[in-house]
Image (cartoon, rainbow, N blue to C red; front, side, top):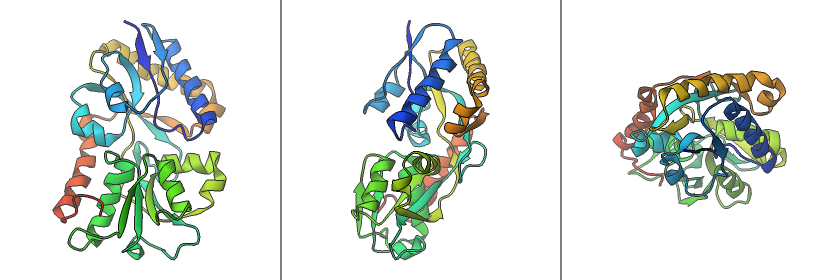
Length: 263
């Protein structure tokens, strides 16, 4: 079998995507059997469930909603970004730089943007943050689904929405790679933290190969410090599935407050 590999989550620009691909190539160079890097596409749920998937990165929300039964955890990256603490991360609440909001509470009746229904950083922690403020399950005047964190940022900048939550790692990369976009928004808060986006493998990958991948991750990280700095990578943690139950806990806390969905 020829395995496949792809890193779909933090490619905020083509230039940064190329650096991620180079790093992934180095990770795979010492791992057997053969593996080819494929370009991520819109069918990520199908890709994450492929039997020939050697390594990819997923969001913790789909991981805890059906994906965990079909994959293995390899490692969780530790990023050097504001809002990260080891393998934990949070999302930043942003509004337009000239908007009249200084906190999430100020955004009552405003318009919210989020990336995807199954995003922990763009939807789940946003819902958790809003839940204590909502009245009868409603807080915003309108909800806009944008399809991506970049889309949410642009919706805020273009006055199509007033507030969004952005994965803090994504936002750090936007500050690095797209400073003109970052300068047009202002941070007004931070969400609760949860485990970061894990690297996963198909359940069919042998345990010895998983161990080899873990070793290769660290070798590729140490081989080029400047590249690691560009990717904001500090290291990796071996988190068990039970740690990701924090994501379900945040969801359940919002539901318990009568706020099952962004509204």
